[in-house]
Structures are given as C-alpha cells and as structure tokens.
Amino acid sequence: MGVKHSLQTGGTFLSFLANILKVLSTSSNYWIRYHGGHSGLWQECSQGTCSNTPCQTMLAMTGACMVLATGFGVLATVMGLRILCQQDESLRGQQVCACLFLVGLLLLIALTGYTVKNAWKNNVFFSWSYFSGWLALPFSILAGLCFLLADMIVQSTDAISSFPVCL
Image 1 (cartoon, rainbow, N blue to C red):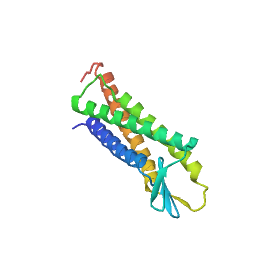
Image 2: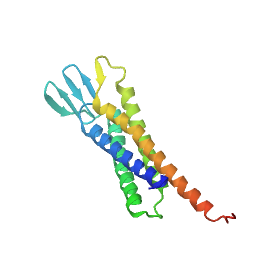
Image 3: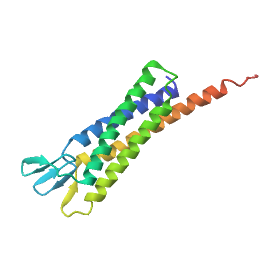
Image 4: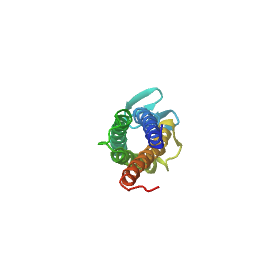
C-alpha cells in the first residue's frame, strides 16, 4: 500500500469519524446545560419536559449550517470510498478535498455563531453535543488535507512520468 492510498484511507476514515460526530452533535439536545435542564438545536428540556425551541435567527442558522455540513460530509465520505474502491482516475481527490474544506467552513460558522449567542449567559454551560461539533471540525480539515496531499502525489507522478529518464 503506497503513500497515496494510505492518505486516501486516512482521509476517508477521518471523514467517517467526523460524520459520526456531526450527526451526534446535530441530533442531540445537550448543546448547553443550565440549572434544571438542557437544550439543543431543536428542543429545550426543563425538569423532564421537552418542547420545541422557539424560532431564533442564530439558532436556525446554526442548525442549517450543521445539517449542510453533515450532508456535504456524507457526500465527501462516499466520494472518498469510491476513490478507494474503484481507483477511479476521473474522480480526483480535489473534489473530496473541496467538500471537506466546505464542511469545515460550515462547522466554523455554525459553532462560532452558537458560541457568540450563548457564551455570556450566566449559569449556562456548554455540553457534550456542542463539543462533539467542535471535535468534528479538525477531523474534517485533516481529512481534506489527506486528500489534498494524495492528489498532489497523483499530479506530481503524472508530471514526472512524461520526462525522459537517462541513467
């Protein structure tokens, strides 16, 4: 197994882990904790009773960016698996890399907006769902870098192969 294949495998694995973290983060109700309850992107739970959160612009933007990031992350993972399984030269790692960097940007926008909205509230603490969203960010960026490096190896191999070698 060469360096290119190892980078593609690592990128696909990191992308898969990031997808798991994004799905857990987006779907759970433990973004913040406060006395007597907790809340997420979609529901607030107080003293054992859960209800839908009222419509707020920043919360809607955070939810939309998280859902888009998850969708693009799944797309990037499928494209990465296709590259690994079929060794298809028509599908370059640049598309996967672009999707994963877009995922990173969407996660950064969503999580920064949520942080700004809730950072200064008294007696409110960020919880595990919020932190798993932040953990997905470096995994997505590292996966994109793996595919970028693998694609650079492919491009340099293609460029060198046309030069005559005299030994």
